[in-house]
Every structure is written in C-alpha cells, then in structure tokens.
Length: 590
Image 1: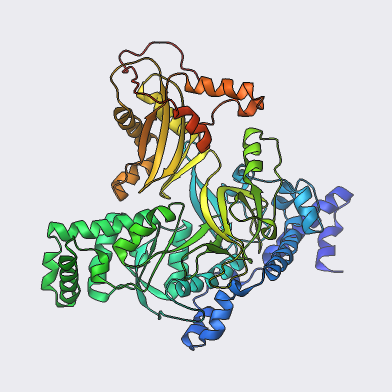
Image 2 (image 1 turned 30 degrees about the horizontal axis):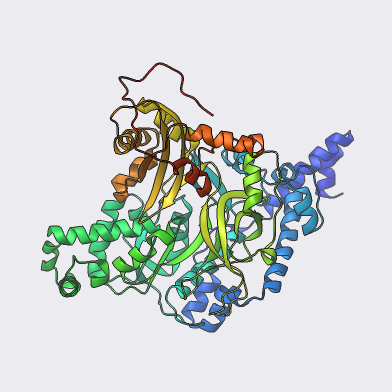
C-alpha cells in the first residue's frame, strides 16, 4: 500500500476523500521545491561572463530581440498552457478562473475574467503561500492605494527570478553597446545606488541581481538605511575616489541626484575633498569642464559613465534633462512589481521591445478600456501582440508565467504601440512606449499613487467652496498633478493660493506625497480654475448626445484631454470664497 493510500484509508465519505487528497497533493507540491527556490550566489550567466563566453551569453540574455513575431507568439502560447496547468491545481487559480478549466489559449481568454488587485488582496496582503500556483522565493511590494492599504504585496517564484536575472544582463548590454554582441562593461564596475529599499522590487533587483556583476556606492545594505540625500552624498564621495560607471534609478531621482551634486559644487562644500589625492583629479577635471562651458559643474564633467538605466512613468519627461546632467541618454525599461520586466529599450534608445517569457500579454483597445471604466460590469475585448496596430493606445493585461499569481491582471497602465517593428535594428517585435495610468490613481514620479478619495479629502479639508473638480497627471518639464477646480462664489483666493492649501493637505494625508518635495525638491500640484457652470454644461452636453449614464459626469481622475478642453474652453478669471466666508450649503458631489 502506498503512503498516499495509507493516508486516505481512514476516510469514509467521498467528500472527505476528495478533501484529504487535495491537502496531500498541496503538500507534495511544496515538498517538490528544492534549494533552487533560494537565491543562489552563482548563476549560469555569471559563469559565462567570467569565462568570457560573450557570444553564448548574448544569445542567452539578449537573443529575444532576434525572435520573429511568430516565434514570440509560440513562446507566449506554450508558457501560458503550462501556467494554466498550475492554476488548475491551486486554490487561487480556481477562484480567479471562476471554475473554468480552459484547455486552450482561446478558451482561457473567453472563459477567464479580467482581474484587479482587489481580487488578490484577501490572499496576498496576508502572504498566503498555501493558495499559490508555486511556492514563492520571496515577497516584494509596491505602493498601495492611499487611504486603503499601504502596500500591494506580490510573490515572486524562483523561475520568474531566473528569467529576470537574464534580462539584467540584457539591460547592461543594451545601455553600453553600439551593436549586437558587444559587452562594454566588466565585473565590479561601480554604480551609484538609486533603488528603493527591499522589499520594493527595485531593491530586490539591485540587492540580489545587479550586485552579482557591479559594485554599489554605497553598498546596498548600507544604502537602504539612508535617506536619499545622505545616500547620494555618500555615494558621490565614494565615486570621486573609486570612479563611477553606472547609475540606475527612477528618472526623477536621477535628476534630483544630479542637481544636488551641482548645488554642492556651487556651495563650495566639495572643496574639503580637494585635500584627498584620489579625488583631486576628478574634481579638477570637472571644474575645468564646467568653467569652459560657463555653467555650474555637473556629474558628466566629473565622470564618463558607461550606462544609465531608468524605469518609470516619467521617463520621457526627464530623458533630455538626464542626458544633459549625466552626459548620456538613459535606457528605459517598463516593469512592475506584479509582472517584473515587460519591455525595454535597445541601444538606439527608441521604442521598447517586449519580452516573451515572463508574462502572457493582452491588450485592451483604448475605446474598450473607456467603456469598462464607465460600466464596471462590462468585460472589454482584448487583442494579442500580433493583432495590435501602430499609433494606437492599449491598456495592458498580463498573466504571469512560471507559477506567478496574476491572471488576466489589469495593471492600470495605458501603453502606446509606436511601431510594429524596429526597422533600424531589424527587430521583428512591436515597439511600445508608456502612455498613462487608466485607473483611478495618479502616479507621481514613482513615489506616490494618489487615489480619488485622498485628493477629494485634501480639497475638502482646505475649506474652500467648490462645485466639482477633476485631476490628472500631465507631463511638462516635470510631472504635474493638475487639478481642475470649479469654484463657487467669488473672493480673492487665486489658483496659486488654492494650490498651496491643497498641497498642504495632501502632505498630511499621504506621506509619500510629502517626500516628493523633501527628497526630490518637487512640488507637483498645479491648479486651474474652470468657468462656473462648466461641469453642469458638460453633463447637459452628454445628455443631449444620448450618452450612457456612466458617461454623464466628468471623471474625477484622469479625464481625457477632450473633456478637459471642454471644461476650460471658455475659461475666465474667477475667484473662490475664503474659508471664513464659506456658506454652510452642501457641496455638490458625484
């Protein structure tokens, strides 16, 4: 008699048998995990690098850019079928698939509903490992919903990590090379540490991944205990002595770090370092270059970096400024805590190329996405990568491979397909760029994600009188939280004064928002008054057009450009009553 049969022998009813069998199968799945589930000190990539087998290493890590689109889709389909098999065997998978048991990719897309983090929160916020498709190697988190939960926790399996590690080599190659097959970096190159602390995804990628190949300034364990200003002050001092080859961080952090270095040079606080011989040469070179250029000293005057790597929603905003400060363009990647790396630029610094082996990719056309926002019960249709069109915007939907938990998951990002292939580098995979958020959150510089609730509370707490409001992120020379407000009554408060009041309340309600100014020197809030009656006129226009009920009113978060153009088209100078003169009437709400 087998062990499993003995364990089942005492059961008497069919229900008990099924339940006991499910428990035993779950236990066996966990027991199948080995030491490979832990982060190893050695990897195949590292060994190939040490042996100088660069051609083989390039094929292993960067070869995805040479796939045909047909090969790309075959990889997607094969890995999705493997993932469906894992999902069928775990509690979370059965819940998310609603009892469906798809056998094909087509059945999966037809039968399995789209999901958001709300579907996972009861399990992942408690870090329930027993319900997952595969035992996680580690847990990581990203910013949660302000006012609801501080973090979104996400598990990461060893197979997901292995795929991610190979892409870290690709990033180092692409940000330093000028053609296929080049390796213009070496082990123990120096990199300024610009990641968030673990267990944020960037902290895990830096602390566990990049650290195999490059040395951080300051070391990761020390850097994670320091505030950003102190960390960069220490890092710059070490870099003056040891040199600097790479910098990887959020775009806004790259700019802030560079500006702090420049300010330090202008203040004269860098002069005491001249007494240290190792630093003297780099400082004097920087001084001479900046004097010849008739401007303050910048990092590019002191170091000639091999590569810059950045990721975040503000990459396109800061790209030119980063190049101006650091001396070379940043390589942009698109990633998330739930999906890890989704796409990255190559050495032409144009569109981002998708990676096939971490997530199954689906794309909701923009019009379908808008319909689903207006009607939460509407299930939008999706396209696959070989069906998208250039110039169109799509909401991205991902399904993890390799035992990850996320199934037809809506990240809340809108991306733009910029081209069906990269003609210059002969890459036969559609190219993308990040476009915007599509959900009820506004991401500012990667530091905070503001919800409708928090912004609304901040406006209410100021005591100003208003009819209605809308807010969205806009990209100028920096990311802007643009608040469009219709005042009620008249007085002498200006838009700038209202912005100050709302800004103060947001700092109280959302700590990460307050860190935008203290860490980055960024004050993102801008207020525009819209004419009195603007929101009501929009509703009447929608009624006359026969719009659905869900599209009658202006969305508070991320309304379209056309909607905002309507609201401000007849803008004029208006004022709002002060708190002391506010009438006790009820403020209209949605």
